[in-house]
Image 1 (cartoon, one colour):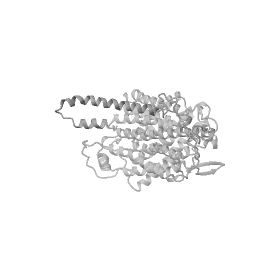
Image 2 (image 1 turned 135 degrees about the horizontal axis):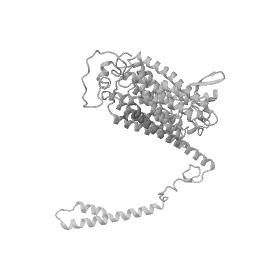
Image 3 (image 1 turned 120 degrees about the vertical axis):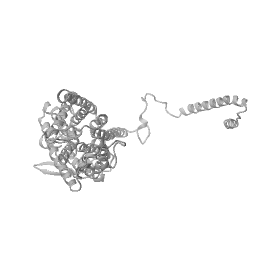
Image 4 (image 1 turned 180 degrees about the horizontal axis):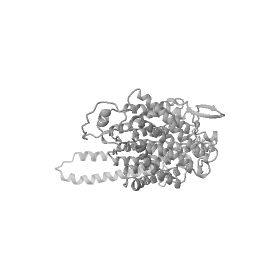
Length: 542
């Protein structure tokens, strides 16, 4: 009642009454003091009903937090169940968080590719990098996941669900050759938390492969053609080779069947992801030809600079950050301490790759430290260490990165000057060439400290320099198989798309810029667009 009375008195204060104005601060002070005392009293009373605060965390989490029929008195079996549940929870959370990191890499790819393209094509390039995510995801959901993982077997790190158990297999010469999975189309029949975690993680890997061709074919790829191809990468091309390596297929069984090490081993995707995307880009760039003005009649090369080096460099940092999820996350287990080795090796290879590319350009090729090659050198190191990151020591990781930095520079010159292929962002050099190098490096430098029982072969994964020539042979077979099979599959898909729509925009569109004709808007609003040269509306030869 007293508080209410005070509120009424305050409301009735008159400006003309000096005495009441002087009493107001004193009244408010008394009310505030009473409220503070009341709150303190309530806090003291309630504190007796709760456990004491634990500022250090040493007492948080005890027997009372174990689910038990008798709270606070769990049986040994209930304790064991809690331990197992927590282990799986850690692994699942790690896998999901790593997948979220890899998903964010799409922003990095978009920035790198767009920065290395011209301003008149930025909306088109960004749109490809954006839409490939839902397109590839839909293809992977419909058929891709089932083809790749339908015969995967138990998901051992996340509870052991064994429902992915249908693989189409050929039996020849007393051996089994897994070709593709047949269970999990539209995720039907595999409604399990571990399968869904695996789907998310593997879907974002597929998306990386699907986005690589958008760089190799940038600035002349017709958007409708891109949309169709993006879907089929996720639905067919990527899953087939992925099944052979990660889904229990025949390349993974080269060790069991023929004694070639542990079969084709690829920890995080140098071949499965990066080579696949690179080969798709290679076939596409060959089919649609170079950009207008890239090559002179005598075959000499004209540089076509990108419009934003800062954008490309920022995108590279985003990719390097996401790569920790890519490589360390491929353990599918936060309880596998080897993730620390994978993460550090990833860092080291990215650093030496960037430095090697910078030094090689500076000292050998252009006498200048080219910023775009700095970026591609770092990415090359990351791609190369992706396969062997968990199987090699730090010194080998640094060496792998050094080699990749030189490889990426020399292969850019090779594709342009020798093969006359136009790759605006260096995707072939970064992903195809260094994806192959990463697999071969595993076959050379795997030191035998990790990989017990990998692909069903007893013992750890050991490379040529540590005594197992068979492992190197298996890596070579996997690399060659990727080039041949992915090349043929992507060629068939490109040719099929060519029956529906043109692969390449017409010459007028290319010269004017793809943004307005293809996307209906400029990438940069207010940017002055130069007049387009007058020339017939024709298709560039494909």
